[in-house]
Length: 457
Image 1 (cartoon, rainbow, N blue to C red):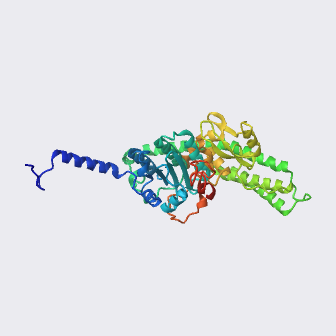
Image 2: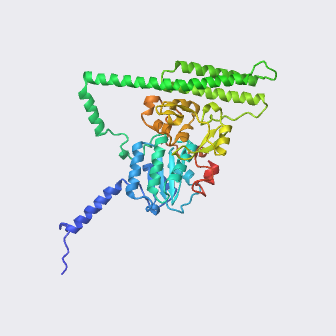
């Protein structure tokens, strides 16, 4: 006869083991990204409001729970508004990014892995359109499309180093972004115990060394900036414009006066510079002055006025750029950079552009390989969020993205800092300000790299 244990009988050993296993599995999966059965955009958006990574049940074979948790932890620890969704092949792409951004309602960088396809979009306050495009290009060109974990980690590492903003408050604090670490407490204790004269001596020594490094960096920059100022003065002389010359009108005289003012501002700002970050206003003035000269030349020659474009990336002394051209730095990924007409022709002919080289610890090098001091100099020429996309993958770009850079050289180097991201905007956002690839490349079809993504944004 079968004996049925009473409700008060103890659990058998197999039953206890089974319950223990279930408890452990529950704990292990508690922090994993949501993978609801429903795959509506609302479901995905809800999951992304709670954490940075969503893996659809239909795409569970693309990214393991362990890889998803590691990716989520990396993003949360960086405290950046990066949202990643892994969806099955065949998921509808029409208006996907726009609808997801609307439903999530948070400014940020949104990346989607769909089958073996990948694309991304971002609010420009978090990452400029060109920078998003360069990031997508870089992982598509270097990552194995059959290894989603590798591709998503590559993209995440590069994006976190270049994007701005902070993680939304709705995310879990498990990433440890705001806690006090044990190492930090131990370090603080050691400093307090050291105390007195020893600590004071150490602080003085560090301050003195830092001041010496800053002075050396400024003197190296001074040589480059003086060359720029001299070159601009020579352009003023070559123009040989006289306000009273025949044919001169008020518009020409205004452009000329503004160019002269820019020249004087640049000289005065450089004379007053005490730190590397003080150089940015100098190159901002020179960039403005060169544009004024370009307008003046067009007026004198009765040509159409030029549009306001950034300087030539390879050497700002070449003046305002004429177009954008594809360029790949050694060991880096392709990107579009603004170039003057002469360098555009050289690149089209398969020749090297004329690159601005400067002094560095390793001899004469292109400015983007010459060290962090050149960040403020480049930032004055390429402000407005343009510089991060141009310098992705270069030595200067990597240095400037480091948290310590702002302390040593200021944040005035082209808007690597100062972003606003992770803010709740709801559906109130400009789709034209939420961009990425946008030129027919990428995932192809619907909302990926074409259609709504390419034309509507």
